[in-house]
Image (cartoon, protein in one colour):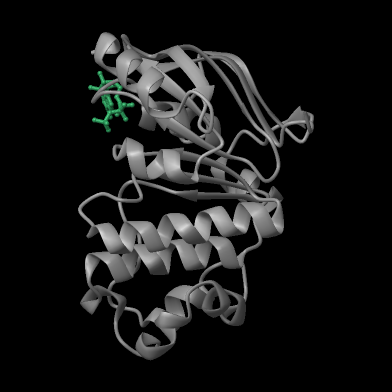
Length: 228
Ligand code: ATP
């Protein structure tokens, strides 16, 4: 197997006395799409936040291309991480174009991934639909040519066609650019269709893991129901 672009080992994190992430280990290889599943409150978002340095780690380590990952989101982003959080963070008063310019990449590359944004460049981002805003977020993230992309609930509240479009582009970026992707997703079937491997979190721990092509749906669904 190729050396991981992201390796998380024994990660622990929480909020005050509440432990949300309890010894999570996972890895992502270049060009690989890895899905992180789990019921509500399982610790998926907290795992991402502790990995990127937004939530302080109580224990464990995060390695990036074989070396310790930068501890703050800001430096990790400069090193090649893109993080698309659950809360869409476009600046609604700025145009689509200005939102893209705020990213680390070129507008041209963003439009290569999502040509449909070209029609909206001069509209305030706040006037876009939820799906278009999510496309803008992902376009901005990918345009920076990250080496690793962490995405939280890409599909939240979006129409199936838009979700397919977004996940399709994520898959393409992994295949064509060698991007490593860690994807938190509620819609398991959709995520499995673009993923290579999956992890299932339950109560802050990895309860099961598998290969998306081999074990796919059945193993995951059984483990999911057991983990609730
Ligand atoms: P969901 O699918 O509902 O987003 P999740 O798997 O992403 O869930 P987390 O959001 O990581 O789970 O939550 C893990 C635990 O941490 C839960 O018990 C949750 O209530 C708690 N938690 C999350 N955010 C906070 C916070 N800001 N302050 C206190 N507790 C929190």
